[in-house]
Amino acid sequence: MFLTSFLLLIVYLIFLGILAALGFPFGSLLVIAAVMAFLQYYFSDKLVLWSTRTRIVEEDEYPELHRMVESLAARAGLPKPKVGITASPVPNAFATGRSPKNAVVAVTDSIMRTLNREELEAVLAHEISHVKNRDMLTLTMASFVSMLAFLIMRNWIFISLFNNRDNNMGALILVYVVSIVVWLVSTLLTRALSRYREFAADRGSAILTENPRALISALTKISGRMDYIPAEKKQEIEGANAFFIIPALSGNTLMELFSTHPPLEKRVAALQELEAQMRGY
Image (cartoon, rainbow, N blue to C red; front, side, top):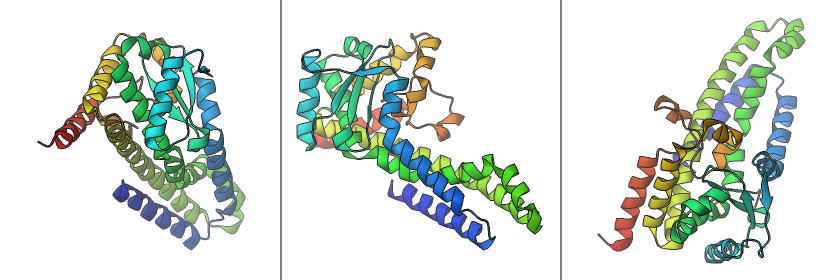
């Protein structure tokens, strides 16, 4: 994660340096990107809850689920997050919120029918680990200049027409090409960072529950169940794929470079290795 973050920083500094050297007026776009990043960070929890039709539930509705979340949050040294339920045949879970004080941990109603208690606890511990690691803030910051590059790509024609009076079309074309490269490289690095955050959340779950085997079993069950879910039901919640413990829709091997989650086999292997370390062999 440190190496990926360092590479992102280098890419961003080079990009801003090139823009400055070419005299590109990126100040206003930088402000727009900052505003977009802030809105994404500040309202992401509400947008995810809205897009997945998740409702916040009280303790008297799901007392056992609340007790599990409260216990795991206490072990992690966090305030208890809000608890949400999503009505969906796709067994899954996610966490969102801009800080531990504003966090929501949500599960689909089907995951509670799919997993046993230990497996569900392991999944909830994974989501609590995302909250503890402040992954929403980390990934928002990581994607900031990528957003700037995307804005330049998307609005290049308008920018070129606006600045053509200075006869600097060659510089603008160079800025456009550099923006494409920066957007592609930063997207790959940000997705890699997201995959590492999933490994970290898996590890956090294993440590909180002291039961890596339960998370392995849960991930395997969820992944296996996905094959039997109608495509239209998975598409209904596709917009929240990046938040789920396992994406509802996954790509082929080539698309793994753009995936927000590591392959199941690698996650299981990492958990098995951690289990061996915890058991001392």
